[in-house]
Amino acid sequence: MIDITQVERLVIALGSRIRQTRIRRKLRQQDLAEAARCSRSTIRAIEAGELTCSIGAVVTVLWVLGVSRELDLVADPAIDESGTLEYSVADRRVRPPRKLNNDF
Image (cartoon, rainbow, N blue to C red):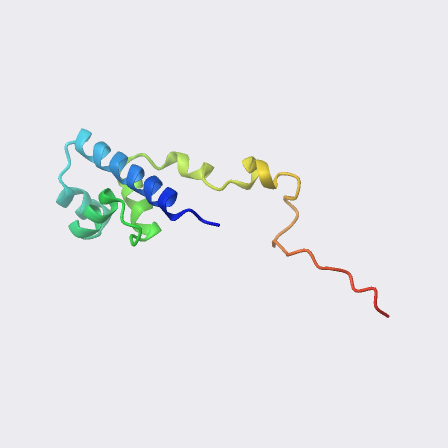
């Protein structure tokens, strides 16, 4: 089961770090919005940790701020400890296991 409060905390923490990064770079929300080609209200929502922000907007803001290099590690199957035994590079699709029907 998903604990939405944990998700909210993670998103709020990310938004806070984005805000701190913007301030350290001496950028106004409007400057960042123009560079990321989005609205100032989108920047405000990202920094506030609103769950309604699109992942595209968040990644664009991270890229504009120059802090997107670690995104390659997010959900990387090669370092997924819980799925390591089941993952194979040869598999192109993830298929749910089928139960055998031995009823002839």
